[in-house]
Image (cartoon, rainbow, N blue to C red; front, side):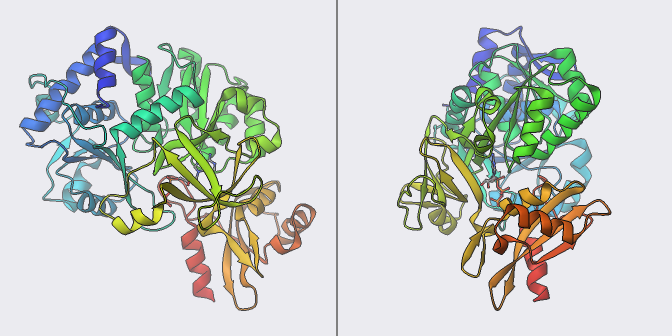
Length: 501
Ligand code: ATP
């Protein structure tokens, strides 16, 4: 089933309903959106000369045209390759070559850099006369596609190596949508508003399907991105605001809601995930904004869909449960296994494996990496975790970040959580440094306000974790290296330490 069917159906059922807003201004109803999409689809096929299955890169910031182009590609039987605009044009060039894309849709702000880096690649610039002309083409009927056809080629952000293209099919993303209704927000209705505050090239963009299926409103912030003050205003004006937010975004939104004294007014569902949310942070978020938080754990290889906790589950969880990522979503099986894939008893730490409808068929043109990730019918996530007897998964760390010192396993996230409790500590990244005697020793990179010193941090560790887990060294730095999604690049920190040794 073609993902664009969701839009076609919504337009048939309720053409007058508002579909797309920018700020609080209505741009298009569902009927108008479907009409624009069908016209663009014809132009993509007949003017750009693209054939079914061809890949189209989307390299634009969150802007109204994003949703339109995304659905136009599927309507025309094409696949999309969304690329975060924060990537450098040279990194984009790698993705264009790897995916074999035949067209890139770019924002006006990206045009010059892309034209210079990729002079051969045909471009469609949003807001250009060509874009306006494409919207004049005759509507193309919705094209049939195989359910297992590529819909979205998602390049991993490369925190653990070179970016790989994950094949996300129409079937997988439909299954992801069903899981959203089942495990994240069963009450999603047509009065809800999804606001695209995080990059639409990532998970936030994938959530458009659930809102499309319900005929809800889609909103692109006037700022084009994540501005806590703007979100608080929108929530108050529109109500029933839903969004996906990475843990750092949640922290900033909570700060704003607290400062303004607005609490969670107007927010319906804030889905957090994509990285560890520390227990103290989510407890504070609940205190300040009330029960509007849901959690998902997923990865590109099983998009947004491994485990989840809905609002009720998050609001009623105790500290141990808040440290977990919840239970398996409806259409996947999740297990914690040893190195041979044998399921481990509750409480034991092993690799998290996933099997089910949302799991990728493989990486794009990378048979070896695909065979490593998909073994014995399961996706090996590279995450380490433990399952409780009642099916709640707690993640320990990514297997590549695990530190083995003197034969003992140390999960950096556990040490980081302790250090973050120290007032004045803003960010922490704990990594292993090769060591002749111990194999590896623990080093903490710390971003802190003046006055925080190593002795205070060491005392905190002594009070909360086993001695062997304490950092042997603290490196006070002004920033941590991060990728374009704001995730810390531990590989870079490890390389720095390896060079020292
Ligand atoms: P790469 O695969 O190239 O290293 P990446 O780490 O950015 O890139 P993503 O698919 O963006 O890959 O992120 C998925 C990872 O993020 C998961 O495997 C997990 O480690 C982490 N993650 C996702 N959701 C959660 C969550 N709710 N809690 C803790 N960690 C999470």
